[in-house]
Length: 330
Length: 129
Image (tube, rainbow over the protein chains, first blue to last red):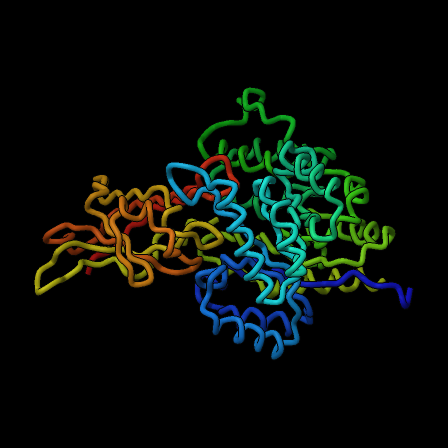
């Protein structure tokens, strides 16, 4: 429908982390790639691609703003971390946590971001004390709802209660689409098969996801002894229990709080579909609920490319963007 | 995963100072997807030719700053950036003999949101020229 505000489509540079780590792409180079694939909005992790974040050299900010101008990009969201484990002998105090969050907000603001993504398990007692500070910087604080720390997790519930009570435009959520894994990612299965995980275990996991559920409720390893042959099986099992296969219906009640969506993907197939995550249904549901916030493509299949094979992050992202753009415009 | 980051292809060599071989070194990238202050590096374990290296013999260098592992515990002002190569050097007069060596490195980081520290490990056979 013309005139109706559309979902805004971006990319998180998390997707290009492997290229960055090996020096194949700089931060500026990543931005150039985004423009080439037609992206207009950019998300990143300060701790991943900005030296000494959240305290870079002052000259960095001018450079960054000039790159945004050059590549016609607008910043969406800075994914931040509060280093509660900074010291070996203790956790950060509440006061230290508040100071750390304020430093991140100041930094994100100087970069032009309007949202800071709070990673799962960010201490909830530092959020409200930063609310005025966030408001003054026009910065929305949004907790990520991510598989492994989904809606039902006690910590997430605590935050949701706080958010609902505060009812402030500066406290919200980021939803990660990894919450909706309909099929267990094939690239992860193949990675672990190469590492020597037992085929019977790999098949079992595939069957559970295809049957419409996941393995959160079956974390009891004793039920799985028949599949466990080696430490790599244990590792696979531990990893798999953090994946979720939720009904899409968990999302609409929270959409009014959602500031940004992580368009998580593991593998774009040759047919230009995501192997695990039902994007057709997701975009339909977002449109039906008049969501006009952000969705940023987030490629995570890069971690499961066999050693010695080059990660194709730019190609995967380009295809994911093309798929989302087409679904949004339909 | 992050295994390829744990031991770099380049930089495994003896260290010469004032004409004498005082030890050896190797290079490593953080086995995680973001940079952290050095104090969050919880543990470094190095095993060369199946012999564990005493932690007192190890120095860690990043961004032109060098610390012992014990000193690193309180270094919050220097970050080990994502993708940045750090040098692990071992005080070992005479160095390693030329030829192939089996090198195991493990680095453990206290990431803030897992209930347990995150370990990256790798074993490689590498050559001293």
